[in-house]
Amino acid sequence: CPRCDVVWCYCCGLSVNAADKALREGHAAEDPIFGHNEDWETNANRCPMYLNMIEQVDDEWADEDIDDEEEFEELCLSRFHTWRTLKLLHQAKRQLGAMSFDRARNYFSSLRNCGFQDGAIDAAGDKPLFYRSSSGCSPHVATPALVVADGAGPSEAFLPSSVSELRAMPVRALKQVMTRLGLEVFRGSEKEDLVQALVPHLPAA
Image (cartoon, rainbow, N blue to C red; front, side, top):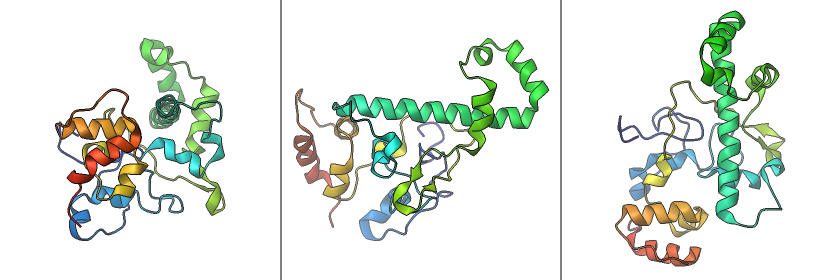
């Protein structure tokens, strides 16, 4: 976060110190947040580096009708924001109580016109972001806190430590990293072109 200078996971809202993560050694230890992404496919306390990776473990996140990568990323982000909004509304209603929540809805037009009905808000309490079908339908247990703010995820602010991590990144994130490094991004560049442009900037093994 550029305001408080805390590295955090956009998916679960936990700081790098609070998040469950694998130990990283050598140069990889400089960016411990990436340890939170290791083994996320089977560890319910870990998060994927990018939301478009969730389809690897949860078929409900797959959309065969979308071929464009950036369009699919936007769909995943929209789905995440819907889930998180409902989750936070559920937390607020639980903390305030149903009567106070109704009074708040009558007073605040943003809450009154949020587009979500009570049934969806009430059901959001038990709904995980996704299920891991590869590990016996294990749900994703990380829950966003009320204090989580919108903004770019921390994983997009750091350069990964390997070529494989670069190739796992969406095109949009690769371009953001290049911009952060002061590298020119040419229109029409393929994903592999972006990866190769960033390879010389990877930390030495």
